[in-house]
Image 1: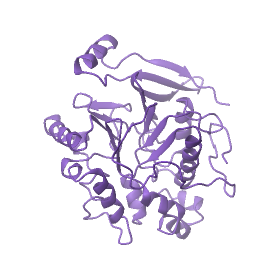
Image 2 (image 1 turned 180 degrees about the vertical axis):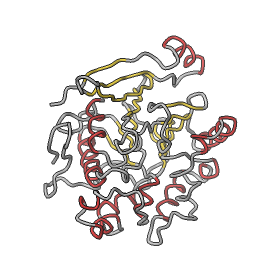
Image 3 (image 1 turned 90 degrees about the vertical axis):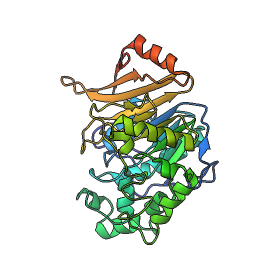
Length: 344
């Protein structure tokens, strides 16, 4: 069960209550999913969270994904979280358990929550704890209990080891950092199984192929290198997995908003949500047949009320000329709708 309203000090999952669900018998298990799938309704994509339950819940509530009691209300929408829930901030246990429950609620309404692995999940599964908040150990009952929870014997550890690292929905490739052609050409099933294999009993990210620095959990070439280098590589990857665009987290955008590269084929969604990073919550919304939007929160300096901004992105699922016409009509960044969020 969930408890608490949206706001400072919100408790997402109460210890000892029923409803802690980590898997189900519904359609499409997380591990080993088909590489390409179609979702007929709205798709939301949420980047790196880094241990900040409050900003995560504020953003999801403001965007209409959950209500003020933290329950799923997005009906048949799909929410994809692209990894890095853990580290920096102290709330990873709360968030992992909450997202398991939220997926169960979503499925009851025809929706779904898909979690992907990030490099910080890999670090923690391999017991590399250099980015762990000291306060977080207490939320697990101490360092020893936390280590057990992330091991293959722990509920969170087992769940994380079952997750995919890259998925395709609606011709869009979602991955934590970026997928280079040499991995894409292997196929997403091989990539996902390769990551799971390396996070097994002999877990190590140093020198590893799939979980190492050039793998899909770490590599920033597509996100940061010159477009003259990045865009041809991106095109090769997209062709290999039969996708039109790639959505990534991992690399915090300079603007704190969603940023586009390579004529909108690379969509960077990590604005630095966590208060322990940049305190800039942002969410991608892909409306079926109605365009791409970014939603971000800021706090009014006078009233201290959070304000949700909604802005169309210059991305079209049609031809390039249509995207150019839309960008010219709305300006380079598009029009901005703002809504003051009332916290109950």
